[in-house]
Structure formats: C-alpha cells, structure tokens
Amino acid sequence: MSDRTKQVEQIAGVAILALLTIGSIVIVLPFLPAILWAVVFTVTIWPFFIKVEKALGGRTSLAAVFCTLLLAMIFFLPLVYVGSKLVGQASIAFDYTQGLLEKGLGSPPLWLKGLPFVGERLERIWQDIGRDTPRLIEMVKPHIKNILSYIVGAGAGMARVFLLTILSLIFFLFLLKEGRSIRTGLERMAVRLGGEKGRHLLYVAGSTMRSVVYGILGAAILQGIMAIFGLWISGVPSPLFIGMVAGVFALIPVGLIQVVLLPAAGWLIFYKGQIVWGIFLAIWSFFVIGNIDNVIRPMLISRGAKIPFLVILLGVLGGLAAGGIIGLFVGATLLAVFYTVLKEWVAVPDEDSNVARPRAD
Image (tube, rainbow, N blue to C red; front, side, top):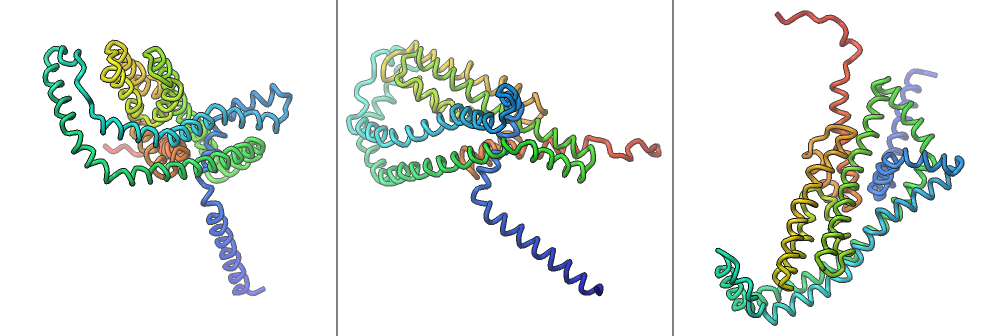
C-alpha cells in the first residue's frame, strides 16, 4: 500500500470520526442540561449509594432505584409542587391585587401615627398613595395583558421543567447502575492523559462537586425549614407552601429568600396589625435565616475545596440563566470544578520540579 493511499485512509478516518462526533453532539445537545445534572448528582450521591447497595446485599439495580426515588422526593417533588402552585395562584394573586387597588388602601391604621419620629410622615405617605389610587390603576391597566401572558408562559415553562426532571432522573438511574464501569473508564482516561496527576485532579473534581451541591442544596433546605417555622409561629397563612417557596429562592445565594419573607412580615404589620409578630419575622429572616448564607453555606462548600464566593455566585447565576433551576446546580458545579482543577493543576509540582534551578542572585 502506497504512502498516498495510507494518507487518504487516515484523512477519511479522521473525517468520519469528526462527523460522528458532530452528529452525536447535535443529537445529545437538547438533553445536555439533564445529562450534566445527572452527572453532578451521581457524583454527589455516590458514597451514599455504595452504603445503600451494601445494605441491600449488593443489589445494584434496587439501590439505584431507591436512590432515584429518594432524590425525587427530596428535591424534585417540592420543586414541581411549588412551581405548579405558583403558576396556579398567580392569577388569583393578580386579581386580589387589582381589587385592592380599586378599593384603595383605606384609612391608615391608628398605630402608624403613633410610631416615634416617623409616624406622621408614614401616615402622610399612606394618604398620598390612597389619593393617587386612580392614577395607579390607569398605569397598571396597560400591563395587565402582558402579566397574563407571562402567567401562561410560566405554565409552559413548568411543563418544560417537568420534562427535564423526568429525563434527569432517568439519566441519574442509568449512571448509578453503570457507575463503576464509567468510573473505571474515567480513571484510565485521566491516568493516560495526565498520569497520577490526572487521577488526583479527577478526585478533586468529584470532591468539589459534592461540596458545591451540599453547600447550595443543604443550606437551602435548612433555610426553608427555618422559614416554615418562622412563618408558622408568626401566624402567616399557608406556612408550608410559603416556606417551600422561600427554600427554592434560597438556592440562589444572594439573599433572595428575603423577597418572600419580608413581604410576609409587612403583611403582618400593615395589614393584620400584628406588629410584634411582624417584627419578629423580619428579625428572624435577617439575622437567623440570612446568616446561613454567611456561615453554614461557606462551611459546607469549603469541606471539599476553598472556593471563592464569587465563583459560586457566577456559576449559580450563569447556570440559572442558561438552564433554569436545573442549570443552577450544573453551572455552579462546573465553574467550581474548573476553578479548583485549574488551581490544583498549577499548584501540583511537575516531575522536573525537583531539579535544582540556578539562583536568581
């Protein structure tokens, strides 16, 4: 066989491989968020999966099904419940707000004027808003159609999230069942590409994934539980639902949970006249629930790697913009893994690092 023939065969082989790769990427691309999410949570839950598998006598398939159902109950069912409930209640809340605007705010409560220093000023602001109610209604009316369209769009978005949820759980189940062979293949690939350094970086990537998920999800669950308790003891209606909404908002570590809790505190103070409980809920929201972002979340994340908060925040916001609530975990994890692996790769000494170098002086 001539050299030219061999060269043609090599080019043809590379072209076929490139076409197959591009075709595979195009086919898999719509499912990429679900696949990445499944990979992240498979790595995160793997140590627990091993324990479950041992407890079930080495039945891998049964352990994978158990872990999948457990993850669905802990993570996805509350998410789907909150999302569907929000979409269902959005139109009701909109009608209620519109009716409140049409009726006006009414007279300010008697206790408002009695507040020291600011009471009279707040009373005047209340009365000014009441007098401007017709103008507020005229300003809101043009946007009613857009708001209703947004509600319909939110419903369609929930259907998409539900579909991605099902796909993610299917991929998650498969990855757990085939986890050992996939892990072995990844370790061999890492060793071939980077030797023992490659194996070490693979371990660092897995540890970082677990830490980020534990930090984001663990802190959000804790904040949601504490929000439910604060809402319940304060006398806010539907504390379970509102607390679960607060827990979903707490997945974004920028204090977004206050968007849910502070209006509830304001409702207690200004609408129900329960000043003490409203102030309690506001303090509980800021100084107890809010400090979880500053204490618990960094502590959980730092167990695997020292990752700056900015890296996590950019990953969360970027993932949320790219893939919604599922992309939130994927974005934060990928960016954290990239940062940590890059830092480890630079920090680990090369093979020639022990060679004596001439002194600069």
